[in-house]
Amino acid sequence: MLVQFHEQTVDDFLIPSFALKKGEIVIVQLPNGPFFHPLELALIDIITGKTVNEKVEIISPLRYVEHVKESWFRYHFLPITVGTYLDKYANKANPVYKKIYDIKWMTPKTKVQALAGNPRRQLSLYTTLSWTSDIIFDLAGVDPQGGQDIYNFVKTVVQSGGSAILFDYSDEFKNDCTAFIQVQYLGGK
Image 1: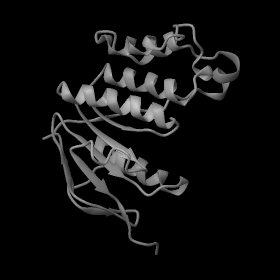
Image 2: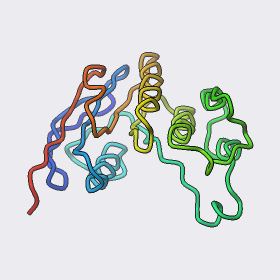
Image 3: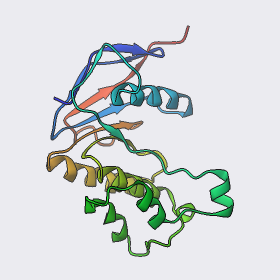
């Protein structure tokens, strides 16, 4: 067991109990819309242990696949390249980070700001997987095909002994996971 999450209310949302073990994918379906992103961030902080919560047991920490960001200065004057990003954030002892170069046109000199949603999310995913195979991820900013590709790749990692929690707004992968958890809105105050 990596994580045991007991039922609780977070920001007027009821999150049912779930557990995550090695070799499992748990999907947490959040309500759709831009107003629910703070809930996702709160849950990520709870599950990664950044926010202490007595109703969550974290046996082994998970790592969130962060979204690739550049500061305003770097974006305009010194854009970061894929190679520079990997040099700074990837674990070079694990070659999974090189998977980004399976994209035909991707090179170390490709500017990150030139990447659309799918390859940008893949860059972040492969970088995170170079550190751990136990992850939390979402599919924000990717198109439907990119979502399929990323989910299928994460499935192969999970089948090799990893584990994953996906925060998603749809039920596209409902029948292709270990547990599907629906978050319920309880109404505002």
